[in-house]
Length: 175
Ligand code: NI
Image 1 (tube, rainbow, N blue to C red):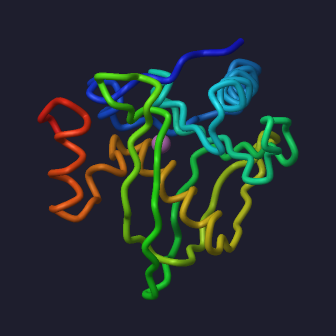
Image 2: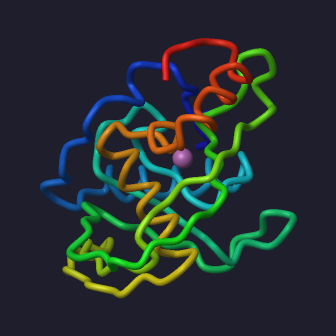
C-alpha cells in the first residue's frame, strides 16, 4: 500500500515516535508499505513519522535507480546513534515532507551541517540487534531520518540566513 507523506507544518511531523516493542506481522507490513511509499514518491529514505505512524521505523535505499527501481531496500527498527564523529560536513538536504505550500510538488532544499560519520544500532526485521558504521551519504541520511523519529525536520537545522530565505519560499512562518 502506498501512503502519502505528511507535509510541514502538519503537527504529526513533530511527534516523537515510540520504540517498537516487538517485530509483529503488522510492523513487517508497515515496513513494506513504507518502502513502496518511498519509491512511489521518489525518496531515498522515509521515517514512519512522515506517514503519521508514530513508530521508530526507517526505510532507505541509497542505490535506487533513476527511475526508482529498488536496488538495496533497508529497514531499520528503533535506530539510534551510538557515537558520531567530531568531523562534520555540509550538504544540501531535501525532504518529502518539506515542500512549498504554494506548490506541493516543489521540494525545498537547504544546507545542513552534520557529523560526517556515525556508529548506529538498530533491530532488523528478524529482531536481531545490528550495529553498523555509517559513512558519508548513509550517515547523513540516517541522521536525517532519525531526526524525523524525534520530530525534527532538516529546516530546524539550517543557518539563520537560509532559514529566512526558506520561510519566504515555504510561504508560512512556522519554522
Ligand atoms: Ni525527510
